[in-house]
Length: 93
Image 1 (tube, rainbow, N blue to C red):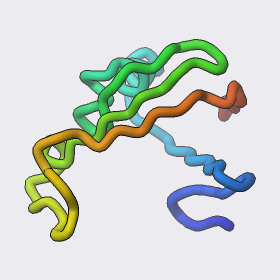
Image 2 (image 1 turned 180 degrees about the vertical axis):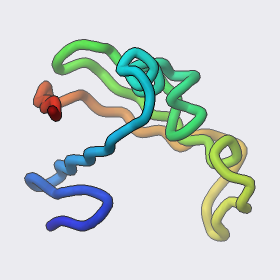
Image 3 (image 1 turned 90 degrees about the vertical axis):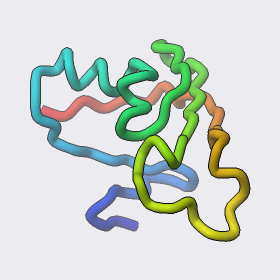
Image 4 (image 1 turned 30 degrees about the vertical axis):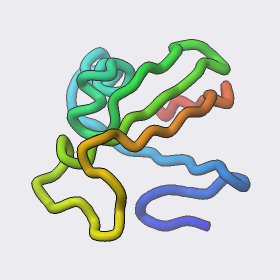
């Protein structure tokens, strides 16, 4: 399945590619440093190694002034996702 947002490459696996402005060092910092990543997606620690643990903490109120979706629980706490990197990587040219 493919659309403008990403490509499903296998069950439970999505590949998202974006061209980001700025030097690679700044882009890497905004992907790997929890405080910078939290400003645009989700904070939380990431072990920067193949197979490393990942914890993403989504704080709705930090990302948008829009009200928390009705029917959702407790907007003041983080929604957490914990997983492990697959070790698969692809670097675009």
